Image 1 (cartoon, one colour):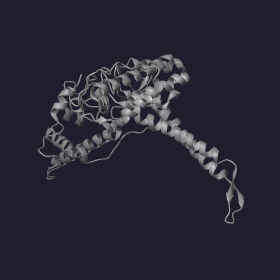
Image 2 (cartoon, rainbow, N blue to C red):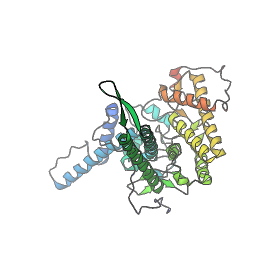
Image 3 (cartoon, rainbow, N blue to C red):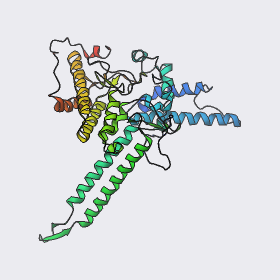
Image 4 (cartoon, rainbow, N blue to C red):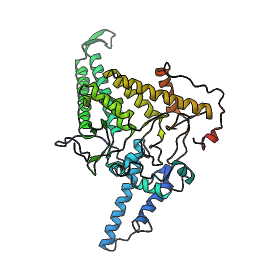
Length: 403
């Protein structure tokens, strides 16, 4: 591996997955914002309208084609980021984010974003969205999820094959019994099990070759255009722990412990949970937001490492994260009388997260589910704070108040 973050072995082609939505138009749910962004891009290229050049000269035609390509690329990158669920994050700037790990739009705070209003994109936010390169990024998260899916499918198919071995009694039209040979069905499911197991094995090898950074003991998104790994430190870098992509550790507890240490020292783990990334861009899937599904995945990953390699530090870190998240949720509920879709991880006072295109939602399904799962597993480790006498504020106040 060289200093540029090049994969260790690209001598042969490997197959990995990425988010790529083909789109040439604004999102229906954010049409005004995307349309304004399109005009902003057109103006920055020296035009007063998005694609209004007449094709009367060769130079004008080339310019028109270039702007049209950029327009389609813009909408595809935005739609692909939305498809990922991480809409929006510095992760989708790829290697561009490497140049400024303190934040692509570091001068723009989340509070200033909230004051701008959803229908009036600030210049820095337009620049951020215009710089999305989602369709050039091979993401760790998606491949970790698909690796786990392929393994689960292999297990289910193998179980189906076992259930269909041998013979069973069948009913004839006259009501009598006869023997049914199930071996053909068993062979079919056994072949499917072998196929999915092979897919998972090949994907894990590809993830190790392309996404794994042995020096930093974690996986990173890969930038196809610049042919290097992104250096954005994100919670998704540790999704493979949840997916149990443990082949990279070669059975070594010491190597696995390096990844646990990398997570602990990453800057992601705070009193209120694990941040989406360490970059404060003003977008919601960046610092300082802690999203409940990410907390659940990180804790599950640490738990899997702990059980597989008997690493005490993994158990300890899982408990630290889980109890911090529960404390944050409980303090927030006691203060505001509601649960939030995301929280500010910088403290455990239950402050709602911010940034992005809309106000943080109240509720919330995945928050409640994560709380229930963590309470069941860590009830003996979680000390309930004395919060009964705290003053509760209204949900309306919760929408604007930040610690």
